Image (cartoon, rainbow over all chains, first blue to last red; front, side, top):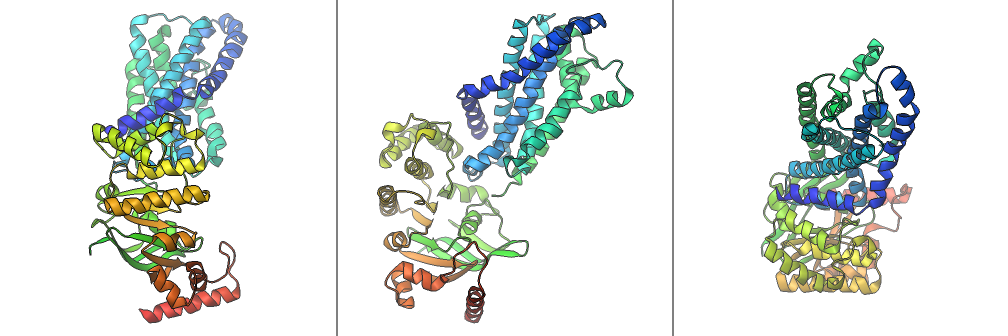
Length: 248
Length: 268
């Protein structure tokens, strides 16, 4: 328990102390929100989709969480290269508590980034339709964060150095984001693409968040919650297992 | 005298490559033991196996009476370690690095605060306890790592090349802390180094490892006598050859290695 607490706290301290990272990782979501939100807004409205900013804001929030979460998980590689990982691996605590502490800390950081983007979306005209559902929205944000921090942890446990990082960005994170319902609605897509979207966990996260923020669920919140919860449990298990196999 | 570390027939293979080849040695409680060898001889691999982060291919190891493969927690509680490469969190302060260690090792908070102050004074970093570690020099980081390794009152202190890249002042101060500790608290010290004069000065016993095998062990004076050398450095060179490591060995070097292997085989 104490190991979980202190390693989680460490992640939060590192986050608070690097304003460059906080601001840097806001750039991309703002770019997407402004360029796509306003750029495609009139077309989206003419096609009968309604307010595009309202539609993509949950997608952009999910994107910020997704990117930050995977990055938090992958920080294991940094810790391995800069040596801090060894300090935790020789401590008399279980590998499981180390991995849970790190993942929890990373997930809280990613969720916080999501909340910051949420506020920025409000500044750009995003409107929440039902405030009582806000706690559910935050729960979805946390689940997205936890799921993808676990994936990052799993990947980071296997990779030896940062060489593989572009591979992860281009073949895991980017496809997860683009082949989801973050930027466009699922209805009317080609059958193959629709199937891909159904297999992508990000889709369920975005749908949950979008629904909870008042734009209606495509799957229903129970389904979204069940899919995300189950996958998070499985991946946290895989991440812990791979982490426990690390030898120096 | 009780043995704090006992190693019997320890082997580590990486595929076809044998990094540690049937080594046996023991370290008496309270002694300062120097583990010497050229680059790539198997020193760090051995330390990793003693400190539970690498599983041996075969052989038995006892650290403070426990087996690092099966009683990991007991072994981990017994030792403190300063790794060859830095292992501090640069984004945290000296105090926070110490606290994190104390919490991971379940040192009660009142005792933790007391020992942190005591140890930071000991290594001369008390006035910098609130500074981020990334602002520290290499020597300060090393001293902080020594202090951190001692926080949970370990019975054994592992030091993997603790003085590499440090100026003579810092090297001297680090060794004087360690000698003082060994006398005052009876901590057993297991260290590696490339500076033979340091080993000669502080170690009561040394073992020389080369190509994964122990080629000599005993007090530094014995090693010098057996090899008829004036200094431990000369003794070391005469035991391990002049060939520079991390390169393809020459034919002569391979011959020497083979001869050593034969001699080693004969002794057993």
